[in-house]
Length: 198
View 1 (cartoon, helix red, strand yellow):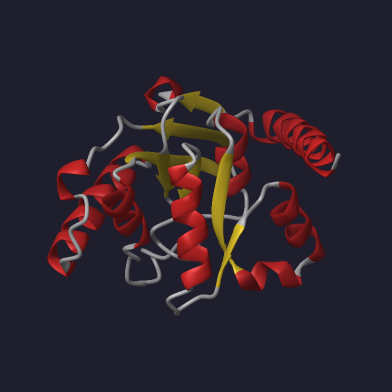
View 2 (cartoon, one colour; view 1 turned 60 degrees about the vertical axis):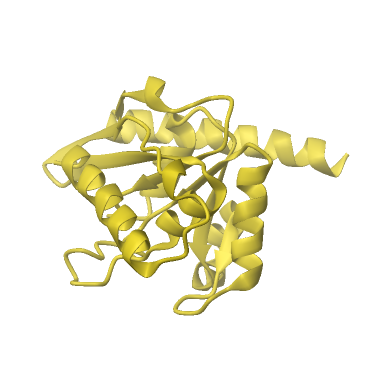
């Protein structure tokens, strides 16, 4: 019964967000067919606003679990969204073993994991170091990475465009724990995200 209620709640909230974003931001989706539907996948996007996770949630067509910083639960609205959408909460700037295990379990179950390599909103613009979490999960699980670029939504340009790029396959590195490889994979993921977000 609890799972059924959660599925219904998720569906209702997704529909409400979809309608809101369609009316206010007139969003357009490009490349949705690039997202594999029957295998584990990691969606990585650029992070500009609080709107980014909901936009991916309502457009990717997959059951998706987001990695989100634990501090967001201090806001009751975001805490509720976290529960409804099964977010995986992460303690920032720490090796959160529980979150890592839950993320790998999500991929092992064949589901979709979504995260923002910038680690925070407008991380690149702030000069923040890009996190290697996406690369770690891709190499550890063998799951493909789908880069996502989000643009628009600013004052004077409300229309938002979400573009999903072709899947990146890093399975040849599976099991590799070398930092140089992690950095190389992270760099390739970010280059694709930046290209799609221009």
